[in-house]
Length: 256
Image (cartoon, rainbow, N blue to C red; front, side, top):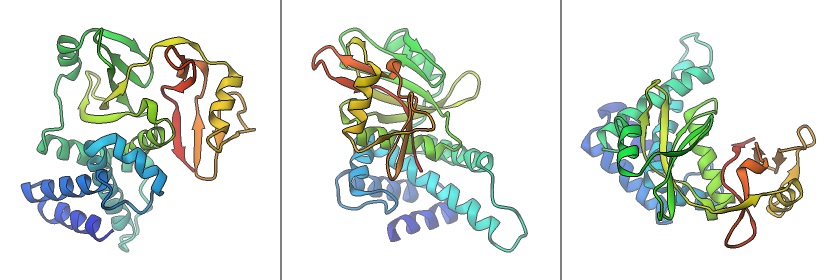
């Protein structure tokens, strides 16, 4: 935690200078290589962080700084109320954008670039635009947050990677789309779908990981001591053509 605090102090005093960027990268590399950790995650969850890559780790550090800064301001005797989720999200997006641009992890006009270099979108939903080039082993997604804060959107990737390593998401950059929406650019293994999974197959997959069916929403939600999984419907869980096993591509994942 001392290393995190030193990074927070560097951001506070210098902004995203070369020194600060190197400190964030060094810390991210130490986490990715198993030399240190972030205390709010369990050891098992750290596997999800590592699979997400140094860009995910760096963005998580910056998001933590943004949250801490707002909380400190509201508790400084100014009489202000605690920051809202909207204020936290706006601050996190802003600082991650500054960091990503300073560290060359920001892509302008990403949709045009991905279309030209990867190919046309093969799917688009409420959360992601998906690009794929025939023969590649992975897809690229532009993922917009459906969570209350950007940090929770990053946490969702960490949770997914921990629970479903066979479809782990690796963050490579950030962007804004033509509507100005902040998007996370990531890669994910390309899965050939034999068919959609049944409810029983999804139940078996998730309960084997220590979850129980959430009785408040038994159709597509599951809970454990720390995590809530939602949106676990057949469109997000396939039967893999190669292994013949249920495999989760995406879901709503969050800490309690």
